[in-house]
Length: 292
Ligand code: GUN
Image (cartoon, rainbow, N blue to C red; front, side, top):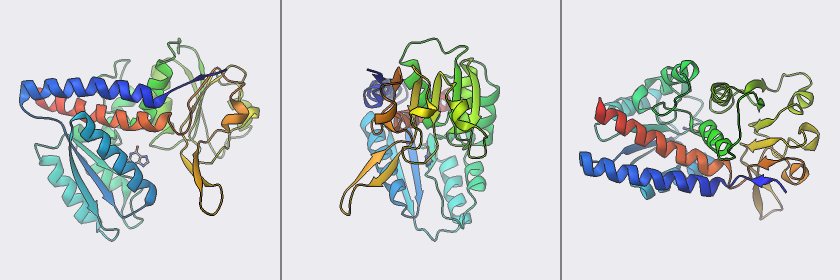
């Protein structure tokens, strides 16, 4: 039987630690971290994520400032709001939920967030810091999903140095920062994507396989080496029948579970870790801003 990486439990441990840190910040500085959550439009999945992030932030004692804007919001108005949040002393973290409506340039918006308040770690300055920084990740704003994946791997207490890690997917949100993080752990990292040749063969050599494909149950046992560790980043809602649907990952769990040494489930794996890491970034930003 593989080790099932219990993201819910590991995220709860991280949130419990953050709760104590936030109480300490309150005692010392008479304030708590603040997170501004910006959603533009009504993409159903985004609404679910924003609700979960808001709830978790409140649970650990972070103040949440919700900004839900109309789908028709103009880019300049969104950037004006971000400029206000950038200078609002009560706000330590700013999260702009993606995707944004097509009329808005995502890159321009993300670049307008003050790097020290960039709770997602998507600003070019933070992307650059992640790529050149040495081992210590204590004060960096690291993209939440890949950092959550790394924390799941660390939970296994295995040596990551020298491991063959394959990341499926090259997005700015997951694939690229994931590869950077694994490189910092001294893994030998390969990123594969939709244009990669012999993708199955490459994945089959992985000691650690990170699946961030965005296609339901895409990775099956033919992609997986015996004894590999699998982190499944996918969150795909699939229909069971006219009334019912369920969440599945990018990996066909039932097909690979007897082949692998460890695997993160969907739901209950990476998802809760992403949220906990957002709270971590917000708390770190608050601490950094109190010092500076
Ligand atoms: N959309 C999908 N994942 C994310 C994320 O981690 N952060 C934000 N802001 N939007 C997302």
